[in-house]
Amino acid sequence: MKEIPVTELMSHAIKLVAPATPLRDVITRMQSKRHSCIIIGSDGIPEGIITERDLVCVMEKMLEAPDIVNQPAAEFMSPQPHTIQ
Image (cartoon, rainbow, N blue to C red):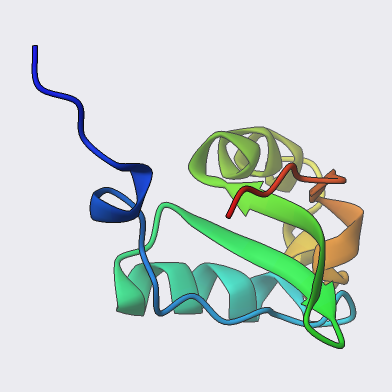
């Protein structure tokens, strides 16, 4: 089996989204850019990640509280993502 460097599989044009960004804006960006996740952070430092899997949990909560999408993205991110060179 041929070894494939990680760099060939990763997206390079991902920009950090501020933790205070409303979840609605994160979802819109994921949809429009066709990304399966968004990195949350500030000053160039990743603080968390929101994935499609996280949004499934959000959808369940939206059944009881539809305005949840106006809350900050930091409320829904998985914290402390591990990054590699």
